Image (cartoon, rainbow, N blue to C red):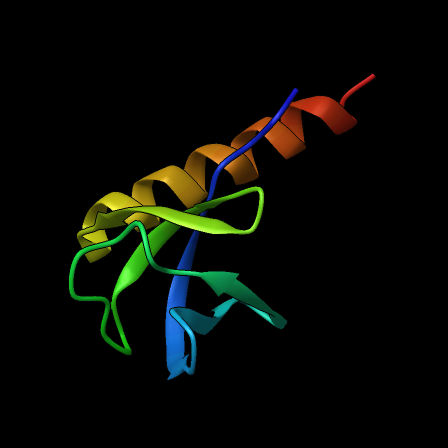
Amino acid sequence: MCLAVPMRIVRLLDGGRALVAQGPVEVEVDVSLVENPRPGDHVIVHAGYAIETLALQEAEERLALFRRMAELGRQP
């Protein structure tokens, strides 16, 4: 199964790339598919590409769903 994860743009880099973060995890991704990416924006990241911009509330809701799925996966 593939997941697309909400992450926050920390800073823009050269060549249509950006450093993004979710919690302590930071990765470099391609942001060329997102219109006008800016630091502080929340984006959906899939396979090394930012594919969609999200409002903060939507990003938080999706992350809450991932946390709930992880909790359910740990139950016997």
